[in-house]
Image (cartoon, rainbow, N blue to C red; front, side, top):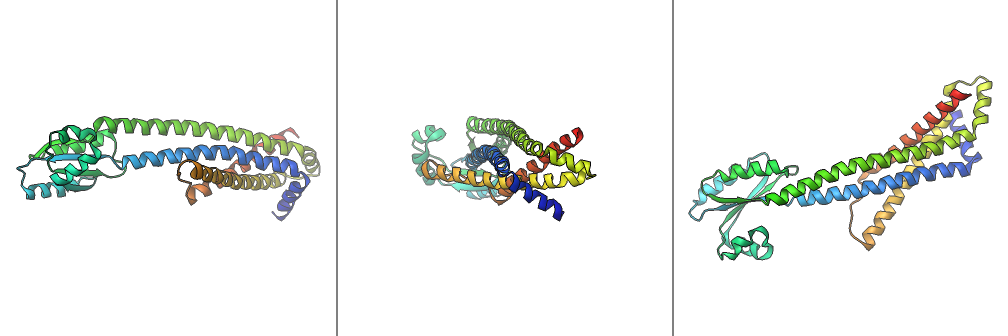
Length: 282
């Protein structure tokens, strides 16, 4: 292992331009992938924030006993999909209607707003089928006059989330494949540049494992350096967007480490494949 590490360092010093090219290629390939990942992360975060605003509003009849309403609220909060249920008085409803209007505009124009139960759902429960099922269960209470949850809006939100997820996976796979191809070609150039060295090592009886190890360590090191550089470039790009355009979310520590590990893995696999092909030819 010590000899392999020494050979790796010698290779870096012997071909600094090619080594720099390899690291730069890995960095910019992962940077492009990282930018896409950052965009996908922020879209997902924005959709999640909108999903948190999905709510069901059940209008209570004027003659409804207070005890029955609060008993129903306890039942509703026990639903597995429900995060909380809050009673909104007619006065509070009127104040909200003046601010929000929206789909409740017709009720507001009537001049009288009934009390209502405002139901917030748990994260992950914004599926139109789930929302509609909860609304129907709430509608079954005798003192509930009407239930509204913006059915059309919920369905559109769910479609947007589905399309964004499928598109994100497809584009992510495409970016990843292109990055691997470019990086693999660059590492192969580095291996070919040391073809005579590999042939001489073969002639003096070096095993394939002994020949491979320095190249694998070199690919691993280049991948780590490229991953770190890509992470730095992505952070700089995000900082520029934050400063001049809009506030965005950056990768958390686990995703950042995963990105660097992806660079290391790509460098390792690229070296292994390139060296393996070359060894079969000499």
